[in-house]
Length: 241
Image 1 (cartoon, rainbow, N blue to C red):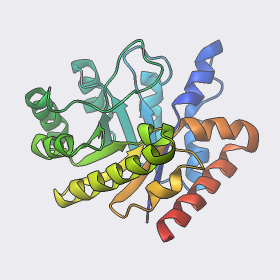
Image 2 (cartoon, helix red, strand yellow):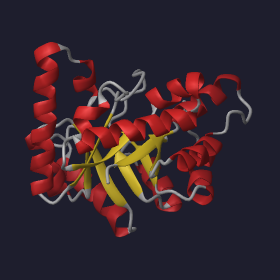
Image 3 (cartoon, helix red, strand yellow):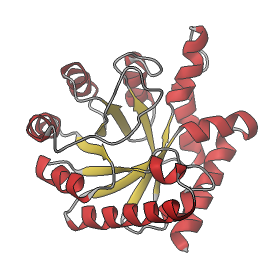
């Protein structure tokens, strides 16, 4: 079954806009579980612009779903991850001035450092995912580094039009097949919505989609439960052909 991981970062974004405790991202994670999510993703950024340290500890302790902790490959984040012990850590690129993650890690530029970093997480029993573009060289580097999972960046696909849209689907499908052949578990995400999720769900090697911003936006209009259930239905329809 194709899994859905729900990213609850932007519940924390709304909370932080005024301070205080409301709305609570942990409550959103519990609602996501009831609606059929199979995992929760939270990105603990270095600037703490949405998810905060205490959110991560509460998500791990209070929500009965696997926690996927997105983070930059820094020593600070390594220390936090080793204390929290999430189900998985997804290493992502991070720049202070960006609004959201803009692309995948360049594993070829940091392969030696990342191999050591991933090894420390793996030694602690934490599964490691690398967020990368669907490029075969990057995927091969992920296998050499020792990752368990690659999460293929779908942002370019979601923004493409016409022939470029079709080309991006093919690129993601080829990347997923290459990753699976190397023994990597294949996830995908970034920018997916009701209109774009079907073709990605149809790629058989992909076993998990991580979706957040769109679902949180739709929750304003139709409720989080309805938004997640509809997304799950569209994912299943795409997977079934």
